[in-house]
Length: 445
Image (cartoon, rainbow, N blue to C red; front, side):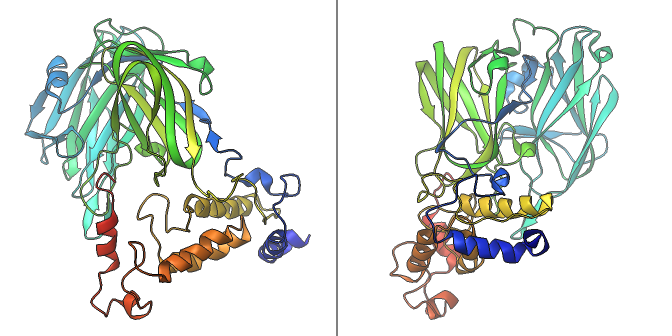
């Protein structure tokens, strides 16, 4: 079969042919099942993951009230950080540890979820002991870039059998093992077999109807409760996240988003390669009923996961969780490709369509270098990604206008100077690309 034997040539030929028509219907595209782009501009979550009906208890390291309520202890020294993501760092050195005691139902299995911020200075390793028994070893080598080392706020969960909850309390200790100090940002005791202590934790009800329906989140304490719902949109999305809510009084909900499941924690995926770790979450104050748009229209950030966490005592019902998809604004239907790729190798099909969708997340009115980071025009990216755009969804306006903007009169996008040759090489004394990026970067991003 030609398309299987010569898949790249077949794809190029079909893409060029497809460019001469308005678009291919899904029935005309044999690779339609691999398209990752949504077919509508209003997108609902694909699923809800790792949401436990009962938040038995919760401690926020670094928060004085929360630590006091959970018998905080330390040995070898520790430090509280409030500059970026709130948490408590374990000191480096043999014998250094911090611990907290959480209340749980007796003789019931449970899960411990831990968010750590890692280290901004290098690789780290620590062990987790529960009631004196080592149950987990945590190690991570931080990303090194631009002369600095950064670790993001990550989340991990592990299960414990009922034998650990025989007394109704679990003492969780974090002990330094090697490397740089690790910062613990959040600790949850979670489960589904019983209800939490009325003075602690919280619950999530109505999960059977998610993600399409509504769910009610109840928190019993600001110092000991942080029930949450984690939504998954299936693939990274670009646009405005929104939800409807109803509460009898007032409530504060933390919204944290990320592209990776590993970073779907209390602070989102706030890794920066131009400065220290950032807290990418936002606290939203709610009263009565209404709706919230998380990102302003035109936001250029991409994300796949969104965590909604109730931070204050009370009850709030969440419904109508949606994403207003803003990538490829020139396409009425983002899934309507003009060209396609298809062969008898499933992995190769998935790679091609993943590449095409990546280009879509980078496409606004121009083809940008990324949907999350710089979100700016770069000549090398236009040269590499332009053919991908033309051979798949054929947004020729985004490619054409990107080149025009890049080489046109300076207006905040074009750099470094009026001369596209000497300016690009920065030999005319004009600003460098880094300086231009810094000047136009939103302080919050």
